[in-house]
Image (cartoon, rainbow, N blue to C red; front, side):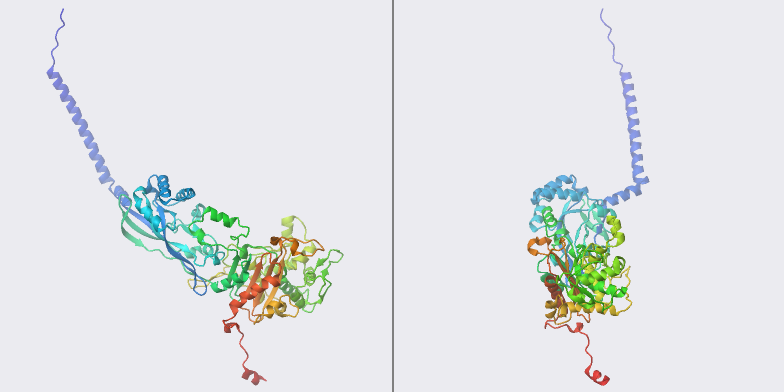
Length: 632
């Protein structure tokens, strides 16, 4: 039986279509309303927010680092300046895959692989958003051209001209002025993030570090308009930075050169002070190094060479070198003994060539094994007689000896603006008990009286103690800075002057030092005889290795680096002190034979004119002949 045929209901289909059209229209209408509402919300309700966000994307505030202050010697010779240099900077936010960009930089500039690791390390350091990070300094013209040709491969990379620290004197002032270097992560945590925005270098050592706040200056800003690629279109507003203060040091370039020449390339230290002002006139630590290597980043190989050198060029011997002062302290011990009342200028000790404590068999030897016979204070200093000072130290005792020598600056930091300075060591009963859990022995007091034993001092401390003898105990801390923007540095914690019961005690110590140079039996009379002015000085020898009881020092049996250090201190002119000098020559053996000539050469360079005579400003005024006749 055939199936019935169903006819299509066109009216029903028409109604379905109309319903779907209506639903679609309603949906479209609703979506349109939502879109309009959203546009209204964004463009009307949140207009201020999005307007500000858009402006921030278009306008950026860029820091302008200040120009670092210059450093001059006392005569206006530039020691540290700033010179133009082209550097390669990368802005991470504009570089995209910045690690790939670094790979392209290494490829384009044909750099060694170790530079790639260094670049990535610099990129990871803390910084502000959109702040360019300099990764390579002192670009050559060829490198700049290579970057320009491959600019399309280097998004966020640009060549920037900036001022970089430069030390035209090279290694001559590396240990006093110091150097600047790149800011590291630890420094970023303590620095003012606002004032150091845009600054990539900071003082690391020496004067550069101590006076960082004054030398750095104040940061400036500029508002710039950029395009979508981050390129600067125009500057909208600018606040100029305040440059750092210029610094004038008491150092003298000519005297520094003379001191280095006098040292003659030997390992050692020279420091010269003006005893009347505390200004450091010369400060030499040899061997030295070129501080320019550290400014833009020293290579691993170059740094390893400096760090691992047996001669230790990075070590500041003037401030951190600790040496037994030896006989250089004898004038201070003598003055202390006079003031303590344990001796008088006429007190005598018989020297058979050794000294023995009562009831002890041990013999403490004088350097002159045959002895000097009867010795008073002036001869004891002139001859550097150990026996006399063994006896003097025994009479004083460790407590008084420690107290007096501390007043001369031993065992403490004496400088005003040299943060690297070591305090040295002036031993005492309490110190030994705390360090070794042992009592103090009488024999240790004896050898302390000749500057041996536990006592350690820096060349700067020796120079300061010498200056105190020269200016009758007036305490003026040594300082490198002469003026900062025309103003002298101020000592916030001045030390008390050394006041003796009788000011004449100073003269006895000074006269003994003068006899060292000019006396008939003075230990450095050969050097003093060639001087056209009077010098007050004292030699010293610091043992590097101990010698057994009864043995004599034989240089032929001692390795060169185990030989005694040679020391010498002095001031001149003796009757009108204008310079105090301390010299230490490592393994030089003879204070009078090796270190004393260095002291005299430094003094000559400072005191003598081109005619070889004492400069007029350093001469004492001569009595008027007519007035002398009238007084008679």
